[in-house]
Length: 557
Image (cartoon, rainbow, N blue to C red; front, side, top):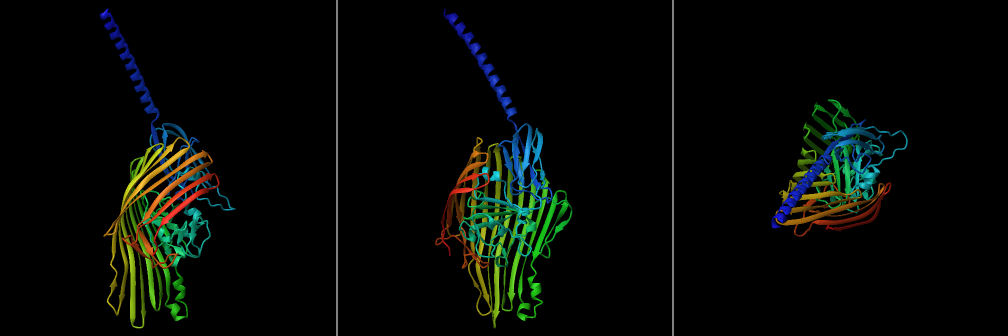
């Protein structure tokens, strides 16, 4: 009897093992099939205007008429991950004819699109971003505009100024009439971070504010962030104006355009993989002053000039090297003296695609702003000058970890050299205020999740260490945002951010002036901080901010 029971149990165990084995094999096969069917590939590329060749910001790329899609960034690039198989890609932008492109996706693919404008002569309507991007994007208070749209606006002396164009956006005002300085949500001009190709510009004005330093022919587009700054940027508490120079590939080995300046813009190709750009301007009011019969006016100097240069080398599919530079100067002179001020900025950027889903941007940046005032009265001469120099290194990584998950992380180190003033006279010994040297280092990481079809969440933190040589300051800057889709044409958004500013300006003008003096945080002057929180309802053609709380802890000198 015992042997029979053992024999039955043994046979039962054999059957159980066979059942488990078959079950495991079945699950394994299903898992393999699932992997095969879940295999995704990436479609990436650039969207341009078919007529001008300029890259386009905020273009929608939608797959199969669903919620799965992407939009182009400030350089017109997009990236979209889709399962293997047949898809229909829809590319659309307000004022342009939409493109529907059928593709059988079997590998990672590069697709570039050129959109054709369907604008007819008549009423001109300028819309900086498609309406549905305003609904689906997590960010609030973000504005994008291309130069083709800026050039449709009214011009001053033949030139359209992009800094005046942004004052058309809600929450942005001129600090004074005719000035290129701007205030965002009540902030001061020094609380705005202005970047040209990731390089700070400390004074963005010519002729005391009547013109900006940005040559329209050399600029591709801009993005304005009002309070909710991307985590990769910091150092200011009010806003970020991110200006990008032209990056499109010229059609010819040499081509040029003209404007009110003596030189405007020239660009061309060295090889099919290397293109260059040189742009310049010079005002010519002083030429007419030299013709005046009045001796004092004949000796007057009132002019500005600026130069832009850029070289782009597309080494291969995964590596792009860019070098850009800017230099500008203003001169005001009379028989009693002369005043000069100007900016210099340079950037070297390497873009490397480890895979189609991981992009690394590495850049070295240098910026300088300075001014000199000199005069002579009787037998006494005086010269006074001040400057600020920044040298920085940064790495930024854009990582698409999945269809519904995006990561951004990186680090930055900036070395500030501030010369508050040097006074030289012919009757006294030179008076030199001691220079200030400071390090501003930061690391950051952020994550963006799409949960289902209706909810997207972005969260992250930026850690900053500021060292002025005698004291260290630390800051943790959390930022979080979410968007909940009520329908395809409406959504609710909420976000919160904390920003810290470690250098600020001492001035005697609310609108800013070329003679501003920058200084770092110290024992007596703490860093400025701003808490920003917002809640908004976004229907298709309207934006309603239900609550927008801004709290600034600042000390102005």
